[in-house]
Image 1: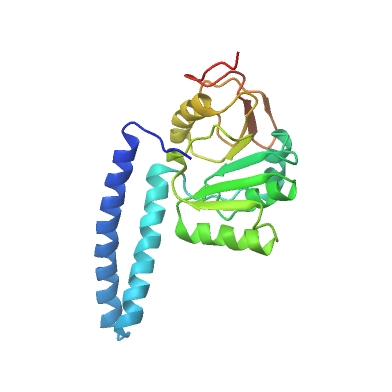
Image 2 (image 1 turned 180 degrees about the vertical axis):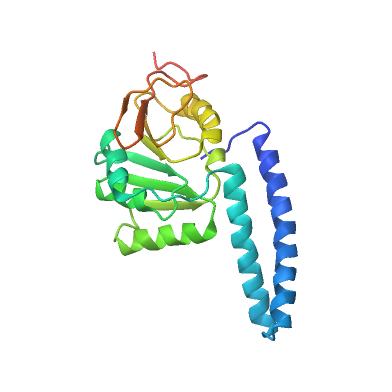
Length: 218
């Protein structure tokens, strides 16, 4: 998939740079603490870096995505039902967490892909896909979904936060092909006309027209 343009790649580069600095600083800090407690040097280095990476991933998710709040099983099924997921569909879950939506979509016969920037949750999602026997139908990407394109997808599922919805609406409406469906849990897009909703807080949107800048087939 091609990456997004504009200023966002530079922001991500800056974020990665500062994250690397923070990892080193946190690693040194934890190392000093654990060494003072009498731990061996090699385990201290490894544990310090892993702890620092995990903390940075959490901070990154808060500022550039949404913190992990798992969708309960009933609403997972409701999102897929409302979006009309069927065998042969391609389903993207943005911020896939532990992979529960990916597993449910794959069980429904879809090809499922998810993006997660927290390394621990990414690993858990991959393990859950394998435990369900669906590793061949599920792809879990460790990375930021803002820099991917969504022009080859049938269904997008998401559970973001209010501050991200306007930007995500612009992105999806400029990239999705006609007929693509978006199921959002809890939060609504600010201007996108609502197609349907459930009583449990699932909102359905449908891309009715060609994305801006696309070329007509005729």
